Length: 349
Length: 113
Image 1 (tube, each protein chain N blue to C red):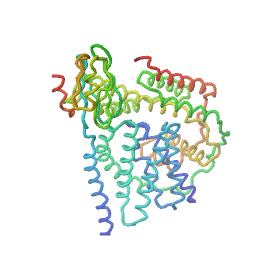
Image 2: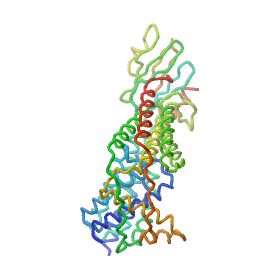
Image 3: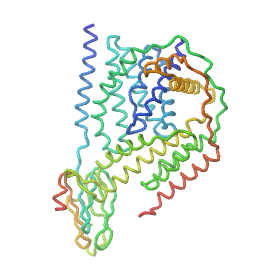
Image 4: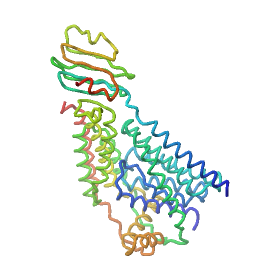
């Protein structure tokens, strides 16, 4: 396979692993398990141009799939992928004596640090308490992903007729999405953030994407704990001499719900065709082919993954069409805007 | 091959050092401002700048936190001694029954006790 095709294949594989990761609860939408890094390590031998393409496609694509695309966290996700990816690449180029396991560990360390760094920019200094545990968990995880990356090989050929014919981008969708996300992220207070979240879930349900509550609950726990570590407001009770304050809890809930709303909204829009015939479109198509191949294969987990890698049982199932009209999107965006404005007026003062 | 092992070892050692360092970065409480206003307890982190309102016996007292210090910005009392105190570890507005004490996290019992 040509290098360029390899980058596309590896990026798609990365998205496939990202999709599998969606079923594991994460405290923040932009936290990543190592699985999506497996293809990155498989691509360490690529030239710098293809490798960069791989990183970008992985960041953009996985952001799109996990619901952080239409939000400010795309940038964070991008930076984290790029920092960690290039660190691994440079380490690999620097000395061929460094083992895959060490490279993986270095990448994991940088991922963990940048994730927590961005998390604390949003959730406050309390988020940094999670750094030690994240680093500790990432170490064995990096060993596992390094091992897997050494075991998997890139197939010689993959079916090429995967590219859908897509329509051109509807600019109105993008504009409405930007407005909606802006409104969501500027909504103050737990009550209105909750209303935003409900609105976003309605949209997600409309789009046909199944709603999974566990990731949202996990994020709520993380946000509340992080926020509570910075006291603010009336003391509700004390734990071991530490004051747990109502204001901090409310802020933690609000922060969490804002992110959850943005994620639900992004997920709702993730089947929107905004990529036209670009390379991103190719990657998205290939990775969803992998997903359907995975779903349709019978047998053990290993079996299914193996056949997914080679796309043996690939048949062209039609993608769920993006069935949200511009008008529906407009209505929802209007609701988000109204909620945002209301939240700034101290109705509950 | 020895070279490879050495490079790997360095990376793993750095990783462990990073873990140890991350424990040191745990947010160190920073001081907390404990406030009792008309019987109700409040707590505010002194590392977060801002204006905070508490309801006292006769009205609202506004507390300002900036650069790790606190002062009473405004209060509904006639003599305004609390406002004139300026930045201090201990602030109180007796007419409004507001008391503010800066302390470490574990001191909370000392105030509400």
